[in-house]
Image (cartoon, rainbow, N blue to C red; front, side, top):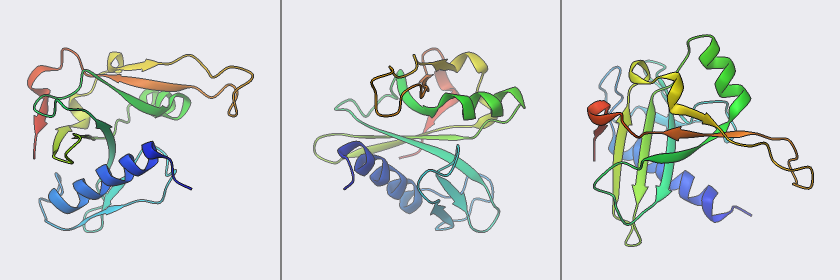
Length: 148
């Protein structure tokens, strides 16, 4: 059974795949969803191999990008950052009427201080010790671009 958050995330990925051209090769209808739990990427261009992350949230304010958005596993992200690897980011916002916006942040405009580790989950949590992170999008100004 999929949770509401998982369904929202899947919807965001589908919206990017259906509405956006590949930022690298500029082709339409070449973006595809990757399997669930693929590390650090959610979509791939089946023409040029471009990889990107998609993060989706529900918000009534879709005309401006969110200031923060939950990321995924911190250790995986940190290992890639330490190696100088950043993935482009699509941010999808969906309101209660299912109207949406899609924003894009290029990998080369991301900075280490945008990634804020969260506290590890408690010992009583189902995934004890797991640690996520938050994307801090405050202060990035025109770096994030609205596509849709």
